[in-house]
Length: 205
Image 1 (tube, rainbow, N blue to C red):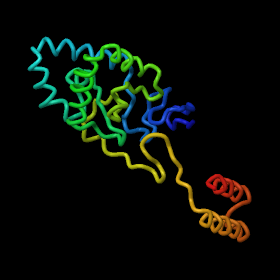
Image 2 (tube, rainbow, N blue to C red; image 1 turned 30 degrees about the horizontal axis):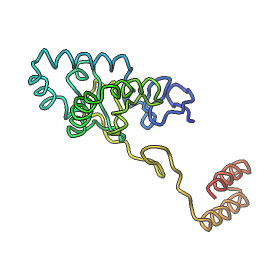
Image 3 (cartoon, rainbow, N blue to C red; image 1 turned 90 degrees about the horizontal axis):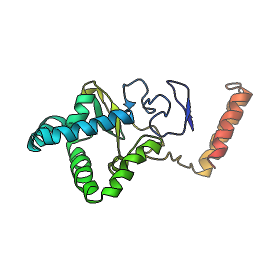
């Protein structure tokens, strides 16, 4: 569980606050999880355009204009964008895999699975569909330029997926505890600060 720095809600989500949709790894960067009804509307627009543009027109739009920006024609119209775990727009290759091979071919061949794939997002804590999980992507509402989606670096000890805290060698922790005690004895830190840092070190044992 973590506290969202934007709205203050406590959330169990890994990447997006379940209350306000803020991108937890980089708050204030205009990366907001897309609403599911907006995503559904984008899917409907894509279906209509697919047939209205006689299939070929949709693929031209997708292949030459939207895929390299992490969008389909429908998502582009509604201001949605597919991003990777590092906060940048999905590459054209990822978009072809996600939209054409998985959604366009695999889900059509296994139709019952396609319903599960979409419904999954209503229960997922980060609003991911099954195809999002397959290619490690998220859908956000972002009308700004794709260049604004700069990479968000990993914090020390952070990895994509469930957070894993690296365990430090016992001897390193023992030395840190001795240094901590000396800082307290020298008056550099208070007893409360000493106890807080000591407990944090003990948890890593």
